[in-house]
Length: 115
Length: 118
Image (cartoon, rainbow over all chains, first blue to last red; front, side, top):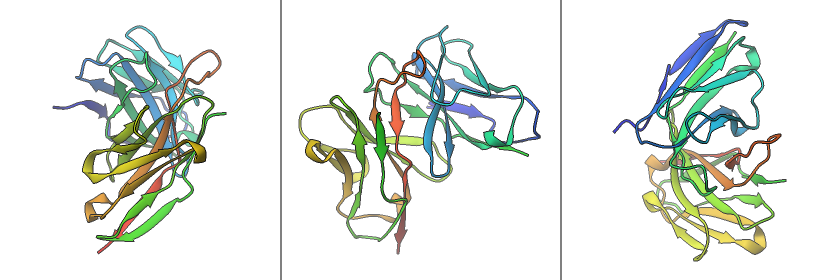
């Protein structure tokens, strides 16, 4: 009964370092999403993948890349981390992005600090 | 432009008291509206959603919300708050958004943090 699993839960990086956040879902969902959550800002969409093999930019994509490795996995990469990327990152999935009334299932988040 | 406003950043209520969290939205078409809850250290969980029909929507954990088109509001209510309800609550609207050729999904408000006094 795992749902959406994110790794790692915590990470500290130095400015300029790279890293990949991993996300996997076991619900056979077609769509997956990456959000960042900053205090007083709510959640903002970074990238999403409507289906396996497709990815699209969201509201705040600069400084990030994504890969939809297969139907289960959707990774987020920071090529050269910056302090402005200090945030809590959430992965989410939904059954089908074809309708905007989709319920999202969220992972428990990755707390990232960039020094 | 589409937006969601949650006017209250932080609310404190006593256990057993009633609760109302405010949400106002701006969206040109008929909105799809959601309330999510985030417990400390956890991801978001859907409480309830409104698409059409009855404007009073029942959700999990004893929550309900009322859609008022004339006021562009979707306020969340609970008659009697429990200590376990302490969390952050996010209102969201489902919207077709063009991010330079892309389309998004949900626009979230900035959240209201609920504290519960014993």
